[in-house]
Image (cartoon, rainbow, N blue to C red):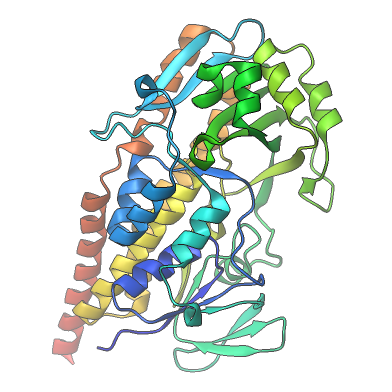
Length: 426
């Protein structure tokens, strides 16, 4: 059975990672991206040990790209530290130091989103990618083909489609039979202010320890995250606030909201006051997530990354889940070819393995947001907060990617055996 062409809708980190993994396995694929070039919103992302392992299994060169770009905590004593959780009001005393347990001491490993995406995209030839192609709809075209309609008037016939087109996914609309792409997308009653601070300024205002290593300042109704990116040249800041209202604005991003942000963190401790003062005019972003979907697959169409399971950033796991998705899908499509089974069977195995884990990330991330704002079960009790924080991330990081890949392949093999039995009966 020849390796089938796969059409990938969306050229973000998930779509490009999948393209890299498929090319590494010799599977033909084409990427259709709505923008004029590769783009990623936001400044920094972090990958845990699970995602770093998945990236190297996807393609060793992709793992090398991340290692070359990754920024770690500056202090050697913080090598394994994910985040130092501190009080945001009063003295910034430590509540919990959350650390990874892997042999590599993979503490917070962050990259600039756009630089990472562009470096990852450099691993695939440009003739694999078509820009300015925003998908409008998908229809069945007879046989096993699908017809894709783009807003520039072009049409494409595809044997299989992977939706990597984000939270507003048109592919998700098709898979779940939704009236609108944003059906089942929920405002989480939180928004964030994002901004960047030159590290020399951050060190001057916060000191070496707080500026150069990852910190989370917790307080009632909000929290502030800071960590180094760009090889330590910049401090990335994400300041979160609870919202008692529904988000009714047509845009999810407001520009130049510095005065509003400073008002909302009035009365917090000195580190937080200094951080919000250093952000001149940060953007304000509403945080949405997907409600659980009954499936990620419909025939020869499947969802990946934010198109499948858009999540809040409270556990730093969203990009990592997209990379895990890409690895599983690339490997299952490769195995489907060698086993002589259909792409649909690969998609079914992928859905069975990936959906429970990725949807659990969405629900636990939302719960983490309550914890950080001291509105969860632990409230503002230091001991209860510490107990929860020290165990919250382990199940994400300690995921045995290789073993779970074997589970998925075994499911695919069972499909292949059933197919052979049915052929023998005929």
